[in-house]
Image 1: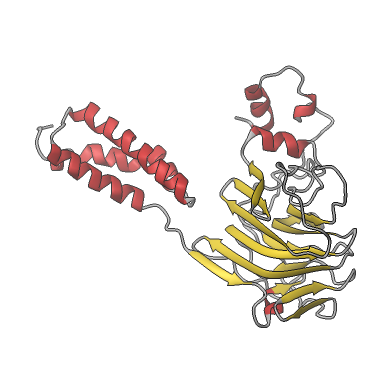
Image 2: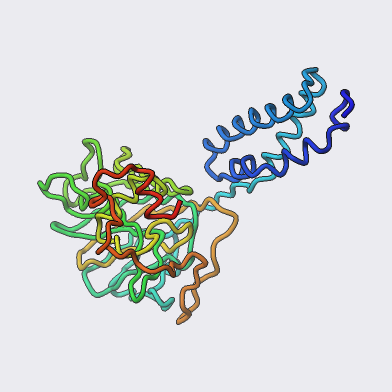
Length: 325
């Protein structure tokens, strides 16, 4: 190769463009991570370039940086779509599991407040499957009440299962994996923030981007989880979801409000979707169609497949045993 302009190094940029490392870093929908990854890509590409050419003049560096911008920019764009789930005739946003209209006598919407008057209304689902999202809402619940907001819900056999933001009257009970704002049965809330007195409105927020999950309550983040971490797999293996292969790791799923037999009220429920599109609307009577539907067999827990019975093996040997890598 002749030193000079970058036009004399087409093979280098063909290599850069094909780097799986760069593409995997660029294809991130979380803005802070994408900014950090852009810096990583810059260092990676500069290493390739200077090792190959030993060129350090300003003109070549400028051209190189332009190419880096084009590479990073070829990843997916973030589109944010916000939906007021309770605006106007907001009940049209919600359906039963099979896509049929919900029972408006049990789930009442009046003046922007959705009220489950008691048991018998059944769980209700947002009519679209969604990917990355942020859901903010206000809620209050009856004394000794129990409910929840579920997300990334998909069908396992005859059951619709997903991650749950627990909502309940905690009373004087100590914090646990079943407390308000917990990721139900998997992650207990941390910190000192607790729900307000029964009858008062609380503010909650759920953020799900890629493999990261956050639960917020009254301005404080109480749960942070990453679904590809060893901590996640350990906790799931010791939860009620341990028999469901890949639980909580699907990138798309349904959003659900739970009927647990208690009165509960919701208002100011805003859904922001961070993706290029939503899955098709669930038609009445049509089976939910998800590309991420889990078809693998459940883990056989008669064998040492969970961290609770791994003994002294290393984390890496445990991970390989569970996931084949």
